[in-house]
Length: 89
Image 1 (cartoon, rainbow, N blue to C red):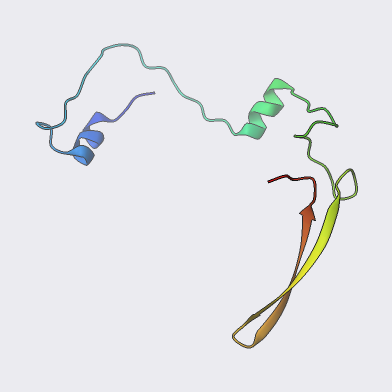
Image 2 (image 1 turned 90 degrees about the vertical axis):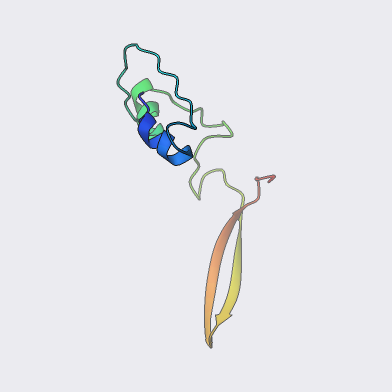
């Protein structure tokens, strides 16, 4: 990756107060990938019993349904949340 040194110098001060070290060489192109893309490209499969496996509401989750009443400016709203009881955090 290549930095735009002029922008950094302007941000941190003037050209006389910010030292810049220039090293000649070859630049390499950078590609951006999302995590989901990398997982698909590598063919990685997570074990079903792994702590990192994504589970559906009906498979393997011990959930508790919580309902809250919220009142604001004369309006009352009911909020329902499903809590994963396996999480220790």
